[in-house]
Image 1 (cartoon, rainbow, N blue to C red):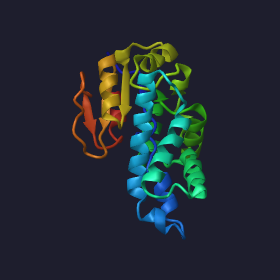
Image 2: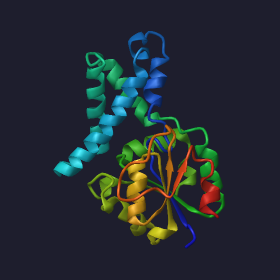
Image 3: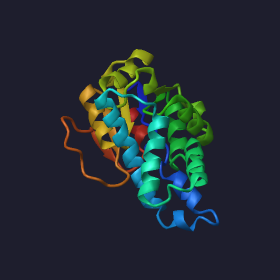
Length: 228
């Protein structure tokens, strides 16, 4: 069945989640952050995801903005920076202005020009996603930005993937679902999507009930895959 709809995870897939800490660490007077920014960014992202899964399992939903703050607070305390409230404020503000990966705008433009329906499906809360999409200048290429807040549970719950068919009236096999999270790509494959895992870090494949159909280094090939 031909692909009609290309759906992307947002954070780590289209947007560089390390950009906030990296950008701030480069400012003058940020020696304490500069010494640990890469580890802090990794811990922040890890806890952000862990808290989304744990809250889903506990039935205690909090939107992704709240989970993002909780993850940052854990990471700041781990690295001895939790008393710097100005640093916390700046890092959170920069999360609304995350950089898109270099290949993203041209890739999305090619998809849109080819007639594909293009969307984001993200754990992110609507205001976070609006900020990132606007800052990256990619809104003109998107037909929809879908947030899990409409169903009140995080990925990989099937209710999240149901949102794609409900919005666009397409069958799962018509969807190319793209994520930088191996577990997300695996869940999409189990759901019935055609899938691509953007394995930027070169990690091993997750041991889950399904496997992503493709493993890529970046997003450059997505238009060719979608229109093959």
